[in-house]
Image 1 (cartoon, helix red, strand yellow):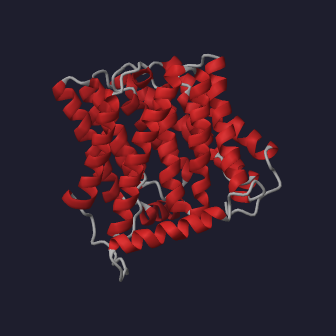
Image 2 (cartoon, rainbow, N blue to C red; image 1 turned 45 degrees about the horizontal axis):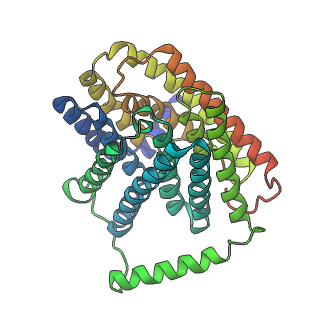
Length: 348
């Protein structure tokens, strides 16, 4: 049994992808150490999420997915943080609109949705993260730099394997026009309030906004973990959401324990930068193995990078993250069961 599990894990894991993503993040954190600029953690976050958003096939699809994520998450982050500075209500409205639009991209398939939902995840983190909520937009420049650095590393500096042929016989501009026209035609089919695609998008937007308002009303620390949980757990049907929430809960518990352990040992930014390398490498490499395994390494990776400016990872903060994850999971399950619960035709 154990041998079979190890064999399956080794077959699915993508070690070199993990090493490349880990290298990008660790290098940016080390630059932050050298320059004594803790906010350089935003560059590492941008590089990490850009690596997650990557489409794995052709050079064109990989470049398009990485640049689309960089543009969407940076522009969206600027929008939501600016509106949130005006009032919590304005911030909630911005989240509702942005996340609903991100959810609607699911009608185009998993890859566009992956880019859009990760961009939305970046936005809900930016709107509530202490260093971003301070009102200074300088972190966005560092974040975009990290996105572009990961893109350059993947496309130019460190290509792991030759890209698959594009099979496009048209000029890239003509191909882009054709793609946009096809996407708009498909989107028009799902703009009706009675469509499954629109129902899922509204459910996702309402649930994420509810999580955002809840953590603000209750003044919960690390509230972005609740909104992140909603975005990453909620699926078109209860049959998809319930297992996902259980897997995330298990992975989060394990990941939180790892983060607390490393936080007790890594007491300086340099030590955290070095600890991040194996964690992010395992996060990316084991991503195809299973969601709970992925989350188990994703949680401490993001905790260490996001809290790079605050090296002491205390037990109470780790517990707050775990509680917010559980809150987000509960909101996602409730939204799936209450908001248009009978529309399950959309693919899980």
